[in-house]
Structure formats: structure tokens, C-alpha cells
Length: 332
Ligand code: NAD
Ligand code: LMR
Image (cartoon, rainbow, N blue to C red; front, side, top):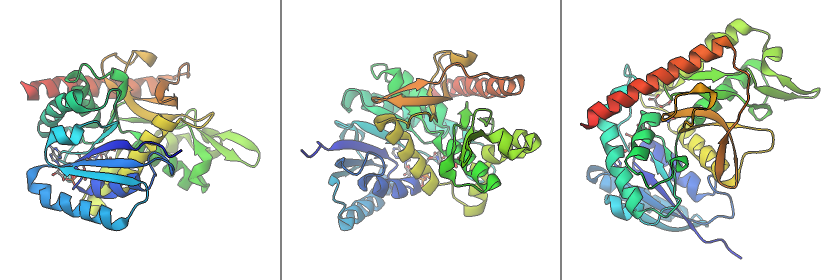
């Protein structure tokens, strides 16, 4: 029997990530090739005409899984009955800015959209915040939508996770599909900590630790980390626009694994509400290694943390606490 359609909201759908993301969702990349979808697209009135153009293209693409499109500038209409909300709407940073420089503009959007989701979305709606500063926008959304379970509000660090996989794959000249279990700890910002201490590569002789294969701790503790931390800025410098196709693809990966589960023996990175695991302060949206099953994520517990990692995990947590204070000061 055919499945019931899932309603997926994309905010900022007329923007560049939106333009890359909606066809992926309509093709089944996010929820599977047998899952019909109804797309809800929200943008602001100045982008209404462009949004309508995206809707026209979705019709023209004749996606078999796409059972309907709502394109609107009305937040209540956009949120009505949605099962999944991908929050991309906001102002992207430009060259020379840090992600927190877009804070004051974006957190107030997330406060007001929190209320709309709370009022109009389907119960148990899963929320993924992509717009920067992603962790803090997600935290504000969670705090101003108290009836949405904290576990349902997440932010995107899967792009950073995928970037780390990509760097290891290039360095070792192995397919990226053979590399797994990197971790992004903390903030989707230049203080994030990309950790390869538990990462492995599938080889003809079995699974091997990345450190054993790379044989260059100086690179792994130095250039590798800064390359991943600065990749967003490098893309902005090269494209004069922030990453879009990789961000859209990572958003699909994030939701797909959350809803359909992570493969056995594999974890992924997600920005989730901290419960104090790994001595990360509770009450922040912090990126952890997680596994997913039956639509629920669980933080991977018990990984040994060395002193080098501890320092980096603490400093990104500190930045998130500062961002949280700054966000609240922007809202008053
Ligand atoms: P963009 O400017 O091309 O698109 C953003 C869209 O949001 C625009 O169409 C704009 O009109 C719309 N918008 C603005 N305010 C809105 C509101 N209140 N409600 C609904 N829509 C609204 O930007 P983009 O390149 O698509 O990037 C979107 C966001 O994603 C930015 O904040 C960017 O920094 C962030 N980003 C995050 C990651 C990540 O890994 N977390 C990766 C790439 C980009
Ligand atoms: C990215 O990581 O590519 C995005 O967050 C865009 C940015 O501002 O870096």
C-alpha cells in the first residue's frame, strides 16, 4: 500500500540552499524513494515572486513522489501540519564575517517562527535548523516553543561531518564511503572540533583507525582541523556565496538518518540539546556523535577523551554559552 505523504517545510525556500534542497526532497533523497511528500515552502514577501518561480519549476519537474506544494509568505500556512521543518530562512554571512555576526538578524526570526511551529505543526514535528548561527538559532527556537520536545529540535553539523570525511578520503585517496565515525563536537563555527580519534577506514585488511593510516598526527591535529573549521569561509571566498549544494545534501543526510536510522556500527554528528554528556554544559545545542533508531537519536556514550580533545570541546562549549547570552541580549 502506498505510504501517506509526509509534509516537509523548507523556510527560506527561494534562497540558494532552498533551490538546491527542494528538488532533492521531491526526488526522495531525504525520506526515501517510496515516501511521497508535500512540500511547504516559506519565504518573505520580497522573495514571493521568486518563490512562485520555484513552485513552477517543481511542477515542471513532474516528480512522481511530490503530491503537493504550498508556497507562501504566511508563516501559519507554511507550518500547518508539517511533520518535518527544515529552517533555512535567514541572512547568510558574507566574506569577512563570523557566523555569529548574523546573530541579531536571525535569532529574532527563530523566536517568532518557534511560536508558529508550536501552534501549527504536526505533533512530534522534527526540526532541523540550518540558518546561522545554527546552534543558537536552534536553541532559541527550542526555548520559545516549550511544547515541542527538546529532542525534536536539532541543528546542522552534518555538513562539517561530511567535510571531515571528505578531507580524510582525499588525504588517503580512498572512497569517502569507506571512511566513517569522525565526530564534530560543538558549534557550527570556527571553534568546532573535528575529531578523528575514533574514525576508521574500511580496507581490504579490515577496518583500520584513521590515525594509523594517515601516520601524520601533526596534520591531523593541525591543518586537517583548521581546514574543516574554515571550509565554510573558503567556499564563501571562492563562490562569493555560502555553500549551498553541500549544505542541502547534508540536510537530507541529517533528516534521512534521523528518520530512517544510522547504519549498524556507524554514527553521525548532529547538533542536539545537551543533557550534560561528556561534561558538556546542559542547556546548549551542541554537536555530538549520535546513532539513530526508530526516529530517535541517542548520543554515543563512553568514548575516551584525551586532553587535547577536552580542551577543544570545552572551548567550543564556551563559545556557545557566549552566543546564548548574546542571543538573549539581542532579543530584549
Ligand atoms: P540565501 O540568502 O540565498 O537564502 C535565504 C532565504 O531566506 C532568502 O530567500 C530570504 O528571503 C529568506 N528569508 C529571510 N528571512 C526569512 C524569514 N523570516 N522567513 C523565511 N525566509 C526568510 O541564503 P542561503 O545561502 O540559502 O543560506 C541560508 C542560511 O543557511 C544562512 O543563514 C547560511 O549562513 C546558512 N548555512 C548554514 C549551513 C550549515 O551547515 N549549518 C551551511 C550553509 C549555509
Ligand atoms: C558553511 O559552513 O558553509 C555555512 O555555515 C556558511 C558559512 O557561513 O560558513
